[in-house]
Amino acid sequence: MPSDFTKNLTVYGLSHAAIDASCAAVAFSLLSSKSITDEYFIQLVVMYNVIAFGSQTLVGLLVDKYRCPKLSAISGSTITASAIPVSFLSPLYAIILAGIGNALFHVGGGTISLNLTKNKAASPGIFVAPGALGLLIGTLYGKSGSFTAWPLLIIIAILCALMYYTKYPEINYNTDEKINTNYFESIILLLLMTIVARSVIGSVVVLPWKSDIFLLVTLTSGIVLGKAFGGIVGDKYGWQKVGVISLLISAPLLAFGAPIPEAAILGIFLFNFTMPITLVAISNTLPGRPGFSFGLTTLALIIGVLPTYAGAGSFLSQSPSVFAIIISSAIVLYYALSLYGRKINA
Amino acid sequence: MKKANLIIISLCLSVSILPSVVRADVVSPGATAAFLLIIIAPIIGIIALIAWLVIRKIKKDSDSEREPEIRS
Image (tube, rainbow over all chains, first blue to last red; front, side):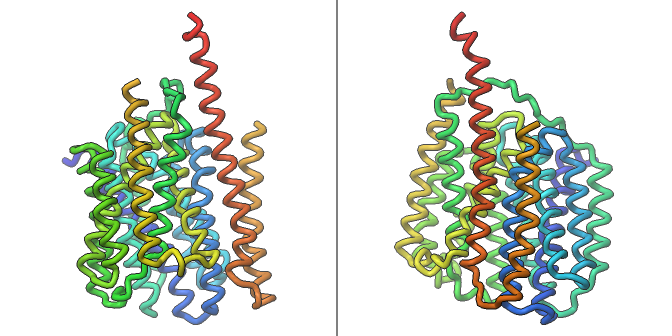
């Protein structure tokens, strides 16, 4: 019999992939069905991102207050599922439902994953990793022109049942744990800055070979494995060492090797190592508030794509800009985790 | 109670303003992503402000808990 740890990680990891796949499928099916214009599609995607990522901080506060991560994950999945049939009637309301459902699911699942291995980065990394795979599958399914509601609805229904019957770990809601407040805000701000930088890079790096399906699948595998291994390797060899070195190696690969698939995929793999590390460092700095911590990281992600929405993407995608942003991110992460280490030792 | 109200009002505003913006853009196709940003950035800003206030409160609460310990 698999342990509760394995069950939780499998069920919530698969659910994460299914939820992200559903959201992407809904959005891209609207575009491929020609029911909306390209410009309207972009606006809907912007709106979806703002609702899905921006609201997680607020959802996290509520989930922590009412201590309901499982309810949040299951209701989020159900709302996301409802977006699928609604997409055939109203693109706007489908996108709103997908955004709200996605936010609820992520906070619920994220809270549970942060408590599977106390203060360690491995579990949250493995929980977040399948999202990229789900996005790829959903995008391809939505674009295929053969998008139908029932396969995703059945999958989400099964996963909701599994989430309902899976006993989740004890969640640490103890906000009375002592925190060393000397560097408290600095640690959080610096960690969030590295997440903003990661989001900027993720939204501006141009990979001209992405139209090749084999390379696209390999790239997505690099993202998935990077997030999953980042936590495991970070826990084993130290977050600061692993996070900073992986960023430093990824800088030239992404800045100057983007046209070369092998270099860029290796760069993306290493670049994603910091995701679980920053998430858990923030969560540990804010003990007893896993939902809020998870929401802060997604708020940083949406802030990171704002420059692209504002039209600065072409400037930021230049090789020197990419290189400078990643190197700056490595320096900021180094200082953040140095202060974090002092906090733990204090 | 005040904080809960603020959170709920912000959430409602975010969800209610955005669809109106998108609809306005359909009526007036000249509007671009930059126009959307004028609306989106303040919403993100409000959420970030709330998050920051919460972080400040956590620190303040922790400081007030530590004060008697330091004195003793």
